[in-house]
Image (cartoon, rainbow, N blue to C red; front, top):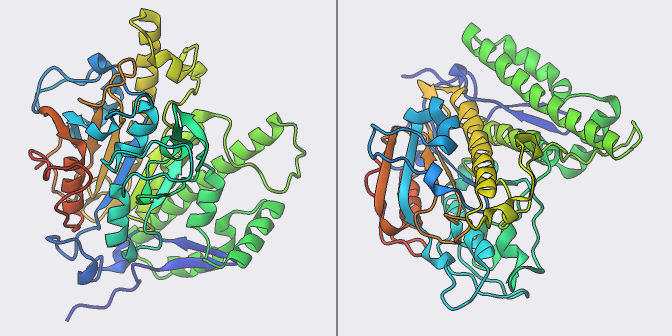
Length: 456
């Protein structure tokens, strides 16, 4: 008879209004999950499989995105060079498309359509009123099926504010261009762009009143969440072996680092706004877009590491984003530059913006890869899509989209390759295949025609 694990997989450190979920430790034993929670075909002792979808706006300069060779013997083009360290964990997928992002008689509005369609594969109703309708997104299909195994069925993150109404693109509602996750065909899932609020959501005990009390107390006394769970942490250390103690310390220090960076960004923003030093509730949204993105990446990793969720989406910008990027030497706004009309200077700027976004993806993969889990890493058990619903931002075409897939999918993906598919192969075929790998069996999703081949 196997010995009962010292700790439950759902063990947490508790304090006033605070619940710090733990990463996997050897003391939690095997199996990882009860058999009913394991993905179909997985050994019960295997780590759970996760999926994340990262969207970037305004397409890419495809000439510097697409490798010239197929298979494993390919070289990363200039835009993808930041991923060199992760080439073995990567699939570059060419030829995939979202046909329903095309006008189909609805006229202009490609940026709104490309976001609404990116995870749904369904054509949105053109309206700037309340009668929005598109389809259920793949992340929410997964969340509905496997979300009961975790505290949060899914987590939705972003950088730019979302809107649920108004006219944002040629008669299309702002709900389309600012939301990529759809719980029902008429209900978008609002993303969170404030790192502080994401942090508080991940590390509270689920009691709203007590959580607010604890948060206010921490801010007044400049305390960390770890100060509130210190007694629990001390008791736990005494029960753990050496390897687990080291892993726990590494995790808690990483958690504290994220918290410090959120505090630092809040203070910098408050200073920039001329706020008083004792301002009670910081804005939480960093003024530095680079740090904003990286904090959100870190929070996504923490959510996966603690098995708080297994499904996440992350928007690096809204459809048609006009963000600026002065720190990489780019003058002008993203959307405006994407309509380059062949201008060499604008093309050079777009290449730099594309490469910057790829570097954020590389950062996310590096963080996932740095977390040891069982015999592998968090990246080994994950599937992380990176892409846009527009290919060439100047042409507004929706075929041959820029799409990457990283992670091992629990050993179900054969990475380290460039795979080219026939033109207009539905992107949703990829999503069907990903759903299969987390034990969700669907015959169709949006405009899919069947699971995507050549992934294993």
